[in-house]
Image (cartoon, rainbow, N blue to C red):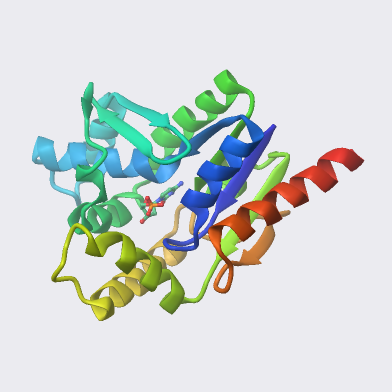
Length: 223
Ligand code: DC
């Protein structure tokens, strides 16, 4: 059983996907972490982010391993843990730019499909999971929330690491990153065909997970 959860930053999809996978007893895949690991690898290799071929070559040669547990995804790049480094504001910006490169996407899409094949069942989250990577998924969801709510969630998460952070700064970053993710030519962020959309603005994570599990339970039972 493949379940896809797509949506913008701060929509609650990562936490919901993790908890849903835990509840269903299946694996969870954080595909954003894969793009982030390539961005970090490119920085470390000193590659010009505008050089699509060079960045694609970095993606192809990077060994990216994920251990996705119910509370967090641990990420290893070429054998070394980079879970914290890939979450910085700088890497977030660079990842958004790099995720436009068709060669990078082709490489990571192939790896994600292989993971799906190997595991058989998983909850996978990102921007293109229901539209491009697993168009025949058993269940497809698209989570969304207002920009203010999404920025507030990110701000609360990030403030622990960066006490000087300003809310307005996070809001403007989120709006510009979403704009870039939604308007790029390759695999833009969109509601995949056949996906059920949920606005999580006024919902707790627990309520979102209950809602997702209910949809799966009902439809799964009627199939
Ligand atoms: O979900 P996230 O914030 O970790 O994603 C980081 C960036 O990677 C974001 O700008 C969008 C991009 N991304 C993507 O293009 N496709 C995916 N499947 C996952 C993430």
